[in-house]
Amino acid sequence: MTKETKWKDSLFYYYCIKFALSAYATLFSIIGLVILCIGIYAEVERQKHKTLEGIFLAPAVILLLLGITMFVVSFIGTVGSLRDNRTLLKMFFWVLLVIFITEILLIFIEIIFENKMNTVFHSNIQEGIRHYYDDLDFKNILDFVQEKFSCCGGDEYRDWNVNQYHSCNNSGPLACGVPYTCCIRKVPGEVVNTLCGYKTLEKERLELVDIIHVRGCIHAIGLWFKDNFEATFGIVLSLLVPQVIGLVMAWLYWQKLNEIYSKEDTVDFRRLEVRDFSFNAVDLTGAGWCWCLPREGGYVPINVVDDEDDGDTICQSKV
Image (cartoon, rainbow, N blue to C red; front, side, top):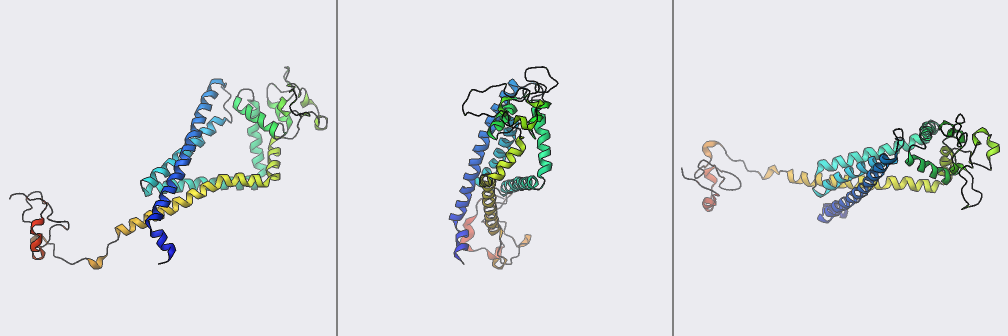
């Protein structure tokens, strides 16, 4: 027997993998519960301030779904590992594997069908821009993205024409303009001019080079990920590696439990003795109506009962 085999057969290995998986699943259960609580709080606040149309791309809903998924899956893993329940461990493993494969497929789809995915993103962002002032959550996210990545709109700055307040067909003060988060700040920390994007939708791109960011946020974010490959790779690994660790631990513990159960269910038939267990050959003396077993092996034929076993009857009743 090799050292590796001895290690896997040892009780220490069993407890190591058991409590490692329990700690892993418990940690992500807590994280999922925290995300769920944040999502509930965000959804309550969103319901207070949103209008009937302000339901697009709500981050609160995304947080709720993410928190529920993480908590439920991790909680199944925690209970399964603590209770040595193979059914729950299988469920934890396969659900986590499906989530992992789905994420891998989404990454490949984004890489292979980049143009089509950009079209989908563009239509979704346009829908969000249409309800920009109705959904404060989406407004805050888009403002942050436009300032962080120096961009404006989804595909380009003219996407803001779909908003009823910024449309050139409108007569308000925001008509034919863009939000101030699209504007170029020449001096860091300067006072923001909220009307710096006034009437910019009427002008050509070259006229706006020093006024607003004309590049769309879809292209800006895509270029940032390509230019910062190390950061992109680190983000992907931070999402996938914890899941791989969970899959490996769940698989190892699942196999260990299968090994333990298989050993308990194994019967060495070479050690079994052939005996006559017919009704006439069985000693039922003292059994009465309850048929209590005189010893662990059950009632045995009279011819094999030893003298020293006569007093081993567990319970007797008068006949």
